[in-house]
Image (cartoon, rainbow, N blue to C red):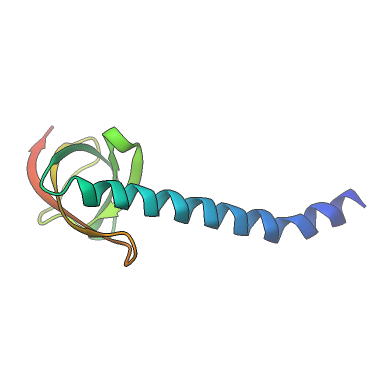
Amino acid sequence: AMDATAAAAQPVLSHSQIVRTGTRQFWLTRWLEQHRGEELDAIVLDTVGRRVRIEIEPLSWRRLYRPPRGLEPGQRLKLRVGACDARAERVELELVDVRT
């Protein structure tokens, strides 16, 4: 009986997690909209094809980023906030500096 209850709850829990993640992304993007032109620190976590997974440190926000050149895990970045649109889920980040 417990397995059936857990199985029935799984889709609800998954939907709840999707909503929570989407809400967090929306509000982080809204914050970035207000800080266009400012510089943020980030660190490269790993590579995913031609993109890298970064953590924007002041926000503790992990996201994929397509850099203008190859980057390696562990490198520290300075990124400038460009155009952002929370409703369109668009975030533009410009690479300003790379430190190892």
